[in-house]
Image (cartoon, rainbow, N blue to C red; front, side, top):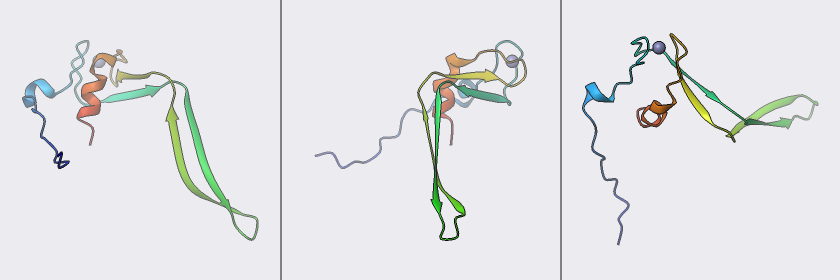
Length: 87
Ligand SMILES: [Zn+2]
């Protein structure tokens, strides 16, 4: 029976795990753009008629692209690696 223990994945060497923009060499500044995002925000109405924000739910329906923050090069090929390294 599975005990639910987490098996550590093989972690790649640090040098190869670092994402570097092949276009300008930037390895610090990146951004992500999501297509077709549905933002849902919940509010609770208070007794005096004012509202308090209760929660935030967002759902990405479309594609998520990943870009270099320096030269805006599309680095979507690195997006999966970015997600693995996102803490
Ligand atoms: Zn770049």
